[in-house]
Length: 584
Image 1 (cartoon, rainbow, N blue to C red):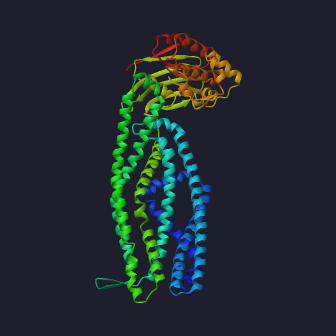
Image 2 (image 1 turned 60 degrees about the vertical axis):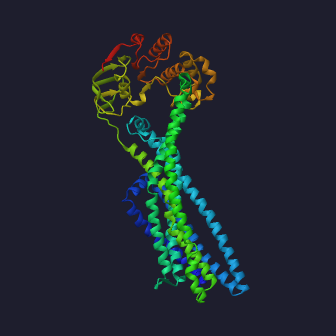
């Protein structure tokens, strides 16, 4: 029985044994990897995406991917034997055997093509499913517990969160699949082709020293040394690639700011300043790109020099055996194929290292983002939910630097009461409103008795409206009034001219003026009917007549609601029963 027949008949048993051994090795490697920083970061990103049901499906899918990967490696091995048999038959002038090997080679090519297509489909399936799940996890955590707000208020907030959720996730998943597949292929191919090369290798003579199977030892030592050198050369790329992601995100955000504040920039004629800012931001990207380019060229040059230098080596080392008629041309060709595949398999990490540096940067950004959302709020106040009253007892708020911003704040009002908070700019009036809305993230002390969050409505100076129709913008986030009620409220808030626009989709945040946005906020108050209304200079863009109309409107329509206002106008005092002065 010839070698190719032995290998072909042994394939089913090889697949079974290798699959079992691979599972065992992966289990050990994963346990060891969990002890490293890289492993902990990877587990932090992966574990939220898995539950019992999805973990079982993932294991089935990964097992199928591993079987296809093993099949690919085995077909590559069989291909070297088929090619060797074909060339040996050509050398022996045996036409019958030659054409038989041509047919078998064609069969192997078809099987490899089908296996490759199925492999690619499974890779994309894993990528899509994982992307869908990881995106849902990140967005959910970002929005839960008001993390999106808390992170913005932190001194060391993660940069470019939108980029981490959208771009980093996609790139991380694609790179993970490529890296895992490449590593598994590298390990399995290295073992399999090393065995084949061991059977083809003879005695290697170096300076009078005879080394049995020396060709196998040579390729292993050569590649390991080259990989260590490549890692040393490419190590700075990890930091540079991390900076590249950050700097590009900052530049994109700067461009978006110009678009979002186009009118203000135009009024100030700030084009020159904006261009200077954008140029400086882009210059930082270019400087970092040059650092990446220099290091990448050095690394790529080293890899190319190594790859080119070993191409003729197996022919040179096997030539004396051909001249001695110990092997045939087909055996030399098989040696070249096996040596090249073994060298490429062993060199996977060396060749992938440049991309791996960018992969490490993305993993660190995603892990850091998840860690930032696990940081608890600094709640040191006692908060209790009550209905129909608001009471603050010895409340103190801390500044972001840890110093006291406010202290000894006491307040007690009942249903239907209203209070105006007054004080100099910067004394902490808005901070106190944020505290009442449970949005203060820097800590404090004291006791709070207030209605539930669902019964509280905070109205900032510039109200937010989402993308979509005007109706969706007014009813944000979850109001669902009847059409007649909505139209009546618009008329009450002096916005009757907008009732024909309710079904139109526009960028209403920029289409509406600040005064219109403030009147829409009062429309929301009338529709939501909250028990506690927090107004932060909510009428600053309105004339005094409209301001008076809106305050009287909510007092007439919502007589049981409590109103807490912040404002600088003296005209506001007439609409409030109590004044809470705050001194710096």
